[in-house]
Each structure stands twice: as structure tokens, then as C-alpha cells.
Image 1: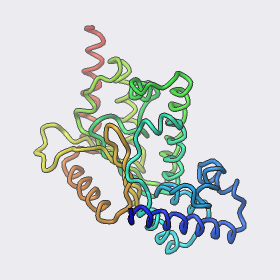
Image 2: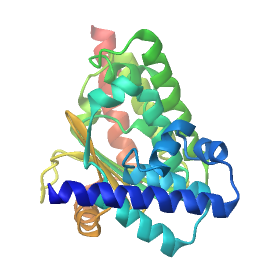
Image 3: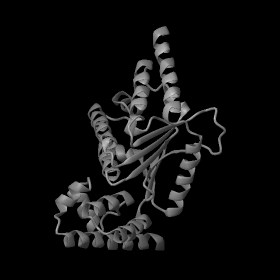
Length: 284
């Protein structure tokens, strides 16, 4: 009970601080909400202490306000204390998965180095439209909601063409072989990986099944610089900015990266698997 009361107090103080910073900036609430990829009503609830903001919410609001780094660090830490660590996917489906894609897009726009480890599917920023649809096939989305989700996911991929940002993707070989869509579509998806790997600001690594393993691929995760990690588990998405947690994921990523094939070796492997899908199509 004491912990819950403390969180409510911190949430109220945090909302008040965000409101004061916005007023000091001279920016209108609507403009800040738009830049932070949230509705004005949600921003109002946060500022008035009626809604505990997530770490992601605070990150986006502070980025929209352009506050100094030390202020951003203090308030982000306060958000970590009050934020719910896990958000069930059913909640995102209820509020709109496409809206969550826009939230992630806003954070990616403020990230210099984005690192992704995927042991379950092709990373979202590298997915073809057909692959996106297949990933969501069991999510019980309406056709309209699914189309909005696909559109939002594809719009997120625009950030890859910003040469000021660096991207490092690690994918396990099993992901490339998992026939989530028909063979010709899988071949096209793998072709996309090869193409994107040639961009100067993108490194795609594949952890081969034959490599001696020093860790378990227990979950997929995304690191935004060294300030925020989003972890994906079957029923929920977990967000953390706790330095010790972030360090753990950095270490995990580095360990898998040492095993990964990159550059021409990676492309050779991916093209070989692609050719297997094409042969499967021909013999099928």
C-alpha cells in the first residue's frame, strides 16, 4: 500500500513538472502532443497526474520539449519508478496496434544507434508487407485495423534511410528458415534483407545454428542507444531504462554479435536459404 501511494505521489509530481516545462517552453499542448505522437487528452491526463506515464511517454514528451540532457535524465528516472514494467499485447490491440507503432516510431526518430536481436521473426523494420500481415495473423485484428498496422509498420521503415542513424540487427538462422509465408514470399523477404544489408548505416548479422553458443536466445529485444530497452515476450511488451537492466541486454547482444555472420558471409547464407525456398516453390 505504501509503495502504491508513493507511486501516485511521484506520478503527480512528474505530471506537474512536465506541465511546467511545457509552459516554460511556450509550446501549446496540442503541438507537444502531436510531436510526442499522443493525443492531447492523454497529455492532459499525464500533466494533471491522472495517468501515470510510461518511460516511453516521458521520453517523447521531453524530446518534443527539447529539454537539457540532465533534466531529461532526472525525469526519465522518475518515470521508471512509476511506470508499469509490462504492457499486455491485448491492451495495444484494444487501443490500436498502429498507434503503438507510431509511438515506437517517435522514439526511433530520437535514437542514434538502434540494436535489435530477434530469435522469433524478421525484425519489424526489415519486414515486407506480406510478412507483417502474417505476423499479425493470430492477433484477432479486424481487416481495417490490420491494414492500419501494416501501414504504420512500413512508415517506420523510413528511418532506415536516415544516414545519421546506425542500425545493427541480429537474427538467428532459425528465423530465416521459419516458413511464415509461402516460399516465393519468403524468398522475397530474404532478398529484402540482402538489399538492406548493403546500406552503409545498416549491419545485419545472422547467428548460424552451427555456431558454438554461449547464451540462450530467451527473448527478442530492441535497444535505443543505451537509455531504453524494449523486450518482447508472448503476452506482453516490457520496457526498462534501469541502467543495470540495459547493461545486461548490451552484454547479451554483444555475445551474440560475436557469433554472427555479417557482410558477404551473411549475404551468402541468406541467398542460399532463399534459393531453398525457390526450389521448394518449383517442386511444390
